[in-house]
Image 1 (cartoon, each protein chain N blue to C red):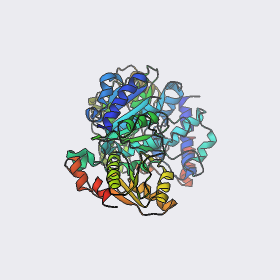
Image 2 (spheres, rainbow over the protein chains, first blue to last red; image 1 turned 135 degrees about the vertical axis):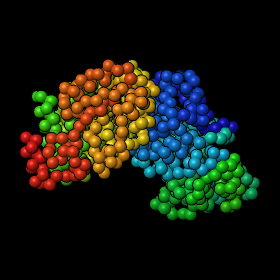
Image 3 (spheres, each protein chain N blue to C red; image 1 turned 90 degrees about the horizontal axis):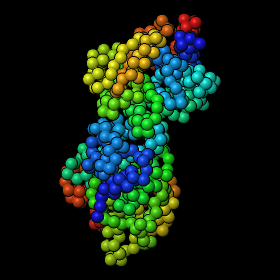
Image 4 (cartoon, chains in turn green, cyan; image 1 turned 180 degrees about the horizontal axis):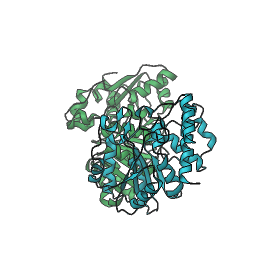
Length: 302
Length: 256
């Protein structure tokens, strides 16, 4: 088990050695976002602007426009939320080649409660033209996706989590913008997941199999662009469609899948996620139960 | 050509462009004209220096200067704010000579900090100049960015404030007040130099002094909103208004 934020920190520390052009920015959360791993090794290339996320995004853009390879981090709430307009008007409108890596997304933040649990960041980032959004589900996915981000132009939003998640992917797994990864080929249903919900979906898949239901799980690690072909394929080939996310169902992956279905292959989608509510304090696991984002919530739909 | 002569041309362009576009911001474009002209025609080495117009609504002044430098085509000026045109109402990175899109106030200084930091990290020469409006200083991000400029001792950064004293809803004093602005900025660890923002000699001296300092410098350039057109001068109502035909003719006549 390892959190995707930790995988991010490890990736940066390694990349910093190979690539002297890398600069990492933080806004007083280097311990939490794990950019401290980079800071400890390359203090001169770690820019901490203090508790000033709007300034951080602008500074990151200035560095990136100067040709630096830039990663900027904060909690999702403050990076996509507080600094939304800077991301939109500076990073987005100028199509800056910058990696915005948001940790502590969703209810997974836990005890800190609603003010720190960003449940709208996918909706916000998805609406920005030219933005690419990834949400890795484990250690390998995080590192491979970040490596991939170095090869693509424009602003990238990478949604990371606070809590440990199981290792899902092997070293030969592939990640690409606009693609997805499929687990299984069951025809009784498709569970679309992303980030921390991939492990939940895979658990549900196992339990459903024991109950005689064969479902497939699709990891929508690339949220923008989304793998339209895979969504349509699954809609055609499987009976029940379910999405599960640690995000509001308004504007999250459920909404994104719905958009594809309405335009291409109208079919019902059951959206599991936070249903038009703010979060609250509690252990992450307790919150997932309280908000109905669990394996059982998937299994019960079949 | 004398800098003052170039300024006169830029001011005429501003009036012409806004009149043809039927919208735009004459007041704040005219107030920062002399500063822009000095920067582009006397101060900057465009091979190594960078400029950001954080007060993006003064875009007509920037476009005119860019066209006179030959960076954009003079013909483009007629396309300002038009759906079929190439010049946006606020600077867009797609326009040649524009380093970053600006216009949503308060964001340019942070980007300038990033430019200046990159130069330091890469040990590259040159200065980064950023022009802010005085009303823009009401945006909190500016003060976040001033703290960053101080923290990293960005001695290759020159901040210029077009201190014309007016904003959309009235005078700065009425709307929010910037009491003791000089002291405020100084207390953030930034050097402050005051000058007459319409006097080329003073602008030049202020810039020369700014480059001697060991940390970031902010030049408070005292200016007159609407400078050069009598009926636009010192009037908040000319912040974002297009002149009528009569007003247009009178303005062009006054500018000679």
